[in-house]
Amino acid sequence: MNIFFVTCAKGLEQVLAEELKSLGITNLRIDVGGISFKGTFEDCYKANLWLRTANRILLIVDKFFAYDDTELYEKIRKINWQKHITNDSFFCVDVNLKDSKMTHSQFVARRIKDAIVDQFREKTGNRPSIDTFSPDLRINVRIFRDEVTLSFDSSGDSLHKRGYRTETGKASLKETLAAGLVLLSNWDKKTDFYDFTCGSGTILIEAAHIALNVAPGIFRQKFGFETWNDFDPKIWQKLKDEAKKLKKSSLPYKFYGSDVNSKNLSNAHVNAKNAKVLEFVELTRKDAREFTPKKNEGVIVSNLPYGERTYEVDELKETYKKIGDTLKQNCKGLSAYLLTEQGILTKSIGLKVTKRHVLFNGDLECRLLEILLY
Ligand SMILES: C[S@@+](CC[C@H](N)C(=O)[O-])C[C@H]1O[C@@H](n2cnc3c(N)ncnc32)[C@H](O)[C@@H]1O
Image 1: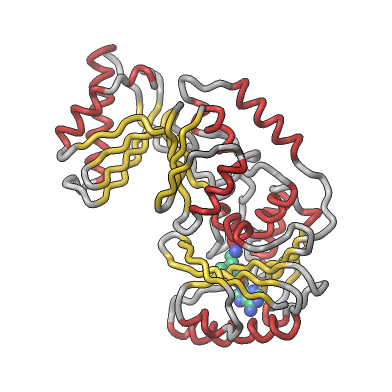
Image 2: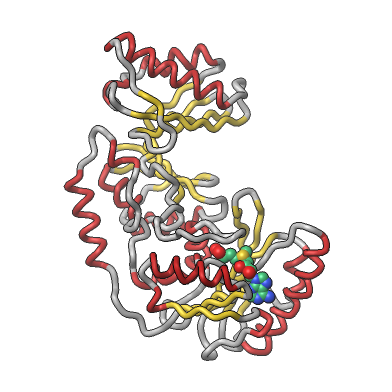
């Protein structure tokens, strides 16, 4: 058994826990921004293929205290690196430092690389190379209050990079957060799904993948674990074949997206095509202030526009108020989940909010507001 740590956006830990349980991975320890679990390599491959809200799945290799770079260098050098990489391998080191005696993450990363390379030079007379773009092994080092957690990143690139989104707008949501919004909504997967500020279509596509039971990792070209020494391609192929069989091919409802910006809508079209859900998606150029659903049932999940400057915020207050009026007048029978920046804009909607979920969109603290229009 190995110990893995799955990272996610702050606020999505419970959703991630439910996802892990549904994969049969139990015995979880929930932390802020992630969850650890004990499991096999098959669990790790499965989690990379199926988790919708996870950013990275890290295999914890070692934990120790180090109070300066010399101590860190010595402890890293003691690990038998030839078990994990060879002279021909490419590797890189990501460092995350917080509340510790060591303060310069780049310098720390260099010392770790030196320790690994020096061990190889001493034992073999040769050394592996550095590649930050597509390494065979991505080493993740977290130093918190002088405790070093050394992990191997089984995901490689962050899992939000599903592989279908070639077009993005200025304020596109990460796919992992978009999936989290859908999973936090009370959508019954039996009725129409709407996003009236759909931008490049991320929420609609993630919702369609959830409804069709598409494994979110199926479009990716590469995962970190595929270049690990002990990678088992047979198990990986079996998991991918099973996932393909589990995909549904039809649905009795649609995913309706609208936006005022035509360029964003054409991005959404391309992305939905890449994600193989275009036949289930209908995109229209329309102002959210005039939104009308097709029926008096369904769910709206939207990431409303944010404003950075004062004049933008003033304009948005008016837009939010009008969206609130439209929801009240046109959307009886639906429920709405609106992601907004925390603060004054929330109040402008003018409707009763039944739940507020705190979520982080990068560093930006947001609220997902639940508004039931029954
Ligand atoms: C935060 S972005 C949404 C990003 C989207 N979730 C994605 O992943 O690409 C807000 C979107 O609202 C759109 N928008 C702004 N005002 C609007 C309005 N009055 N009606 C409809 N869409 C609007 C913008 O064009 C932008 O695409």
